[in-house]
Structures are given as C-alpha cells and as structure tokens.
Length: 434
Image 1 (cartoon, rainbow, N blue to C red):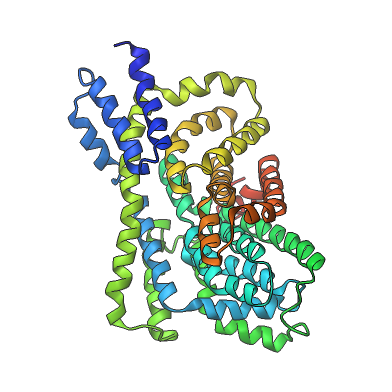
Image 2 (cartoon, rainbow, N blue to C red):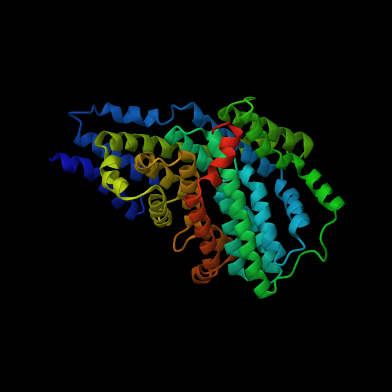
C-alpha cells in the first residue's frame, strides 16, 4: 500500500462515517484505529490505546466536570425565575418585551449553564411558551429562544472555550475574558434585530412603564448571588486567588452554598441525581476527547493539517483566511454537533492560524461562535431542533423567520474577524499583555 493511501484513507473514512450518521465518537475512533492497523510496522498497535488514555491526561480538563456540575446545581436551585425577574425589570417596557427578556435572560444564564443546548431547552420551555401564549408567532418564539442561547457559548464559563484551550494549550482564563465582549456584542445585536421585527409586528411591551430604580435594585439584589458567578471566575483567576481549573471547584462549592443555604431550593437528597446528570454529561464529552486524541496522533504523524493548509496559508492574508474559515465552519457546523466539530477541526486549522499570525484567543472565540451559530442554521442545527420541537414549529417556518437573525450574526462574525481588539482587549487588560 502506498504512503499516500495510508495518509488519506483514514481521513476519507471519517467523512464516510459522518455521512452514514455514525456517532461522532466512533467516527473518530474507527479511522484512528485503521491508521494504526495500516502503519503497525512503524507504530505499535498498543499506541492506539495509549493515545486514547492520553486524551484525559490534562489538568486543564478538570475544569470541564466542575463547571458541568456547577451548571447542574444552579439548575436545581431554580435560578431561572430570579433571573427572569431581573430581565423583566430591565427590558419589560420595550417593544417585543418577552423576546427582549429572552436575550437578557440568556446572557445572565450564559455563565451558569455553560451549554447552548441546555439554554435552548430552558428558554423554549419557559419564556418561549409564554411568548406563544401572548400571541407571538411560534416560529419567532423558536428562533429567538434558539438564537439567544448562542450567547452561552461565549459568556464564561464556556465548555467550548475550555475544550479549545485544552486542545491548543491556550490560556483558558484569557479565553474566558475574550468571550465577554463578543458575547455582549451578540446580545446587543439580537436585541436590535428583535426590536425591528417586534415593532413591525406590533408585539407589545410587558410593562406599561419603565421600572423604577427601586424595582431594579430589588430585582438585582434577589438575583445577585447567581449574577456574581462569572465575576467570581474572572476576578479570582485574574488576581491569582485560584487557577482556571481550580475556579471550577470553587464555583461548585459556591453554587452549593447558593442552592442549599441562600435559596434553600434543594437538600442533600437531590445531590445524587445532580451528580449522576453531571457524570453522564461529562462522560459524553470526555469519550469524544479520548477518540479525538487518537485521531490527533494520526493527523500529527501524517502531517495532514500541514499538507492541507500549506498552499492555502500562503495565498490568504489573516482577514481573508478568517472569513474563509468562517464560511467553512458554518457549513460543517450544520452537519456536525458543535463540540464534536470543535474537537475534530481545531488540530486541522491551528497550523494555518499560527502561520497567519492570528491571536489564538481571537480565533478560539470566533471558532466557538461559528460552530454555535451553525446550531441554529437550517437544515440540521441542533438548537434549532430543540426549540422547534418544544414549540412545535415546522422547519420551513423556522427557516424563513431565522434569516434576519442569521444576517446579524454573520455581521458580528465579520466584525470579530476584522477587528481583533474586540476579542483581545479585555484579556490584554486583565492579564497585563501589551
């Protein structure tokens, strides 16, 4: 067998398995095993199992189960109601108030659930159903609940940014800080787009008048404990109180205090159920990381990323390259779940990014944002399916309704690509990088 066959056969097999709708973990693990079979004279077959285990041997990955567990604890604590009260107080007087509240609520939840899919389900079941009851169109309700959940991918702690930091050895603290401004920019864009659509359709405010300062203060105080979690992470890591990994454990203890002592929403009997859910969610991600580790060994051994990107890197400048990658990620992200696509594509694209001199924090935020936006892009976006299924919306109606929101998000992606300072300003400020 030729060297060319050994190089590309596993890569082609991976995409064949994708086309056959093979579970992502197996679609990565099987081609990696095929590579080791084809090259067993050069690479011992036992290396395959070693590489699977190697994928778990990173201290930074400890942040993943901690933040997943913290999100489960906060869900059990019933923080959605308190944060919804905050959102209603802040924007309830605006046109299309329920839709505006959805975006604000997603921004507040972003640092707590750490999962866009979880946010899409939460928002659709709560505020999305309220929108339908108030005679908002079902398609509009599904679009705004799924679109708002994208903010979760950028506001810390973000599971996607943790995975990217682990794969590229980029500071997770800097990535967390880098996601804040783009997340708020995306929230502002959603609110502006919502206002235009809601005003044209006559979606009424929730409140007859703007909330008084006393009402705002009361709502903020009620939700203060939940709202303080992202600040605890950023401030604690910035001033060296704890590392990013340790911040996950700190947040777990902090959320336990909030849920059991401050809000008294659950007791010790509910803890096993919360732990079980966190273990299952973490295990699903970790097994993908194990398979990706073996696949990454194959890609590095055969220098697949360098062979694919060598010619491309020399023909495109940094901005052109980022815009091209934006298009590629959106297309691929509609076919592959976000975390899986992140694990597969990051090792392939990083050599291009490094050659082009692009800041890895900027690229990490752009990549995570892209793959999450793909989740609301027809025909197979994951968050689109969640919101549409909960609110019983046909795909055709969703596809029409989502167009102005996708246009706004693509514009935000162009801004993030053209102006690196939007992403790297806050990390540079917090971490004293010139």
